[in-house]
Length: 470
Image (cartoon, rainbow, N blue to C red; front, side):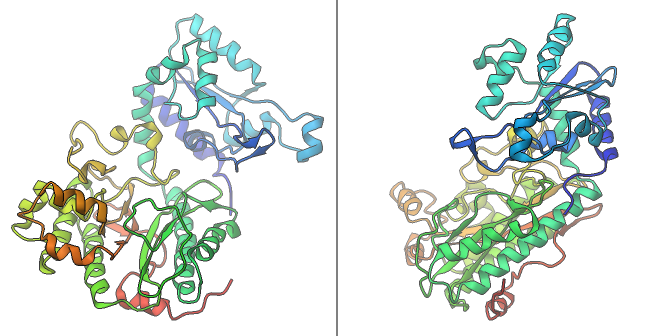
């Protein structure tokens, strides 16, 4: 797999940013290596996503400056010396890296502080994005002569919004890269389905799932969730033996060598056959997932799609006797959130939660669409009006969380909508989530990935009859 787009892609992206900003300068700091337990033993390096978007360079310890008025651009970094070469082998020079992404000027890292000092001395405004790493905060504090406590507050809202506008709409080549991540995700999830019937424990399935992106030069796009306790939304424990009669929830995605993500969830019975009780709940979640695809289109807010999917879930639960009363009123009151305490989805691209470091209130919302401050729906990361080129996840679920049920029952919360006596019969059920990745098109939406990961009850059971092979 390739690791960088053509030089013209990055030149064009920065040109669009200059047009959007008009004045001032943009300061872009790449990530550095991060030690695990001593300086030379580092975590796998991951470049800052915005730096990747505008420069495509995965080397640590780089920085760039873009003059939004003159168009001048600089890349800063230090060339490898002979001691480095002994350990790493020959590496491209910083000038070579600059040429790769179409930046005209390159200098050693020491030149960055000098350039910024000169520019600030002339009264030029420096725009930068919110730092999310302590080392970056310290670096900014030194470069800009600001207190570290002030660095985060003085980031540029103008630059945040300009970057979001650019990154939110995916180009054809970005979509193709996300499709590659989806193809790897398909392999990850079908492997889990095929392994469940013969595996002794969750950890073995987890190890195989996480190894698959490595075959393609990538990695997982987030820490894999794989658990028979699917009622815990972000359950990162994989220590249980596989137990007949339970369901396994797998929330996993791949990141390609270029940094683009996929994010899928499937839930299935470990013995390969759904019980009737499991089928009943599973089908409601699948109906909600399909409903989102049906409703998602340009001009529609994802917040409204979320609420309609909540009604699908409430209606299905009412048919089973777990909810009661008027469905619209139940959702408006937030009663459904006992079973769905999270949002329908989020933006996805270079980050699995795309651009979340820039501020979710700017990524998923705007002045026209504001968050709903109600339990469950308040966790909806993406609510704004959809546009062609947006990539969003579609991930409804139903969960039976004993602690939450007990809490609500104690407070007699939403008794007019929730049949707690029936809910008690599901306290050992776990949880079901079904997640796909959607591309918003000119007149609707489509699922990403050449093949949809088995999703219907029949498809899942059929997939689980197959033998896993490496």
